[in-house]
Image (cartoon, rainbow, N blue to C red; front, side):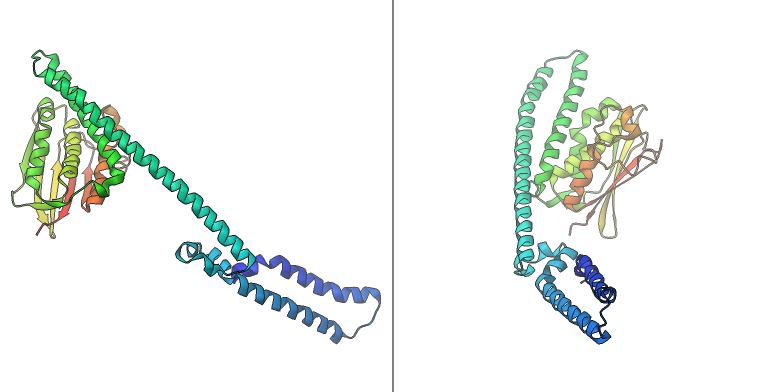
Length: 329
């Protein structure tokens, strides 16, 4: 009703002016008319206007309600707007806008799927030359082989990040939740990155009992652990025999995994943004290998796997990353 009255303010204003002008015309013309005649004319005009407004409101009530609550256009069928000309025009407009929007969505979805397919194929194609280089390095024993191996590991991890980033949009069709051993997953992630631990001189310390079982996807869980362990090792560089401690325990029917490093930590102004995509922060700029995507992917994967991830840190205090899952029963 409020929008209806606002839409007819000009009509109501013109009516008021007209009703004021009628007595003025009689007075200026010098004709003497009984006040009852003028009042009758005003009441008659008012009645005609009232009938018009009532009929108009009945015809366009659904339109004005929909305009006041736009979600009605999505929640309710378009025929509920009525059969008035304005209602039909509004329904046709909304239908055309929805059709165009759906076409744009379908086009964007098709492009996204094509890009995902291309990225997946490209990553797998790049793995072939990497494997050949890896085999060639096995026959090389000079000092340069170690440096080449380190760069190969970086390339391999970079390709894995690209692959998982492209698969994130189709995550629902690319994961399988099962009961897995947290200890075995942690050991597998550490073994996968053993050359990095050795090269940086960092020692992993595991305090996880074999009994801890969680529900997750093995592939995505190992990817998340690898991202956290890689960050922890890279930012622990500079000291001798630094440790990364992995501790699991139960709390409030949840299994907690704490990954604590002895690295340079994260500044207070960066701690709130470390999970944002492409954010590297002050520490990341010191280590040019940082892409700013690792923690973002970890958070997004955690949301989809329905587990939690938290991060606690301070400058020169190291960083603690905490995962938690519902306890498997």
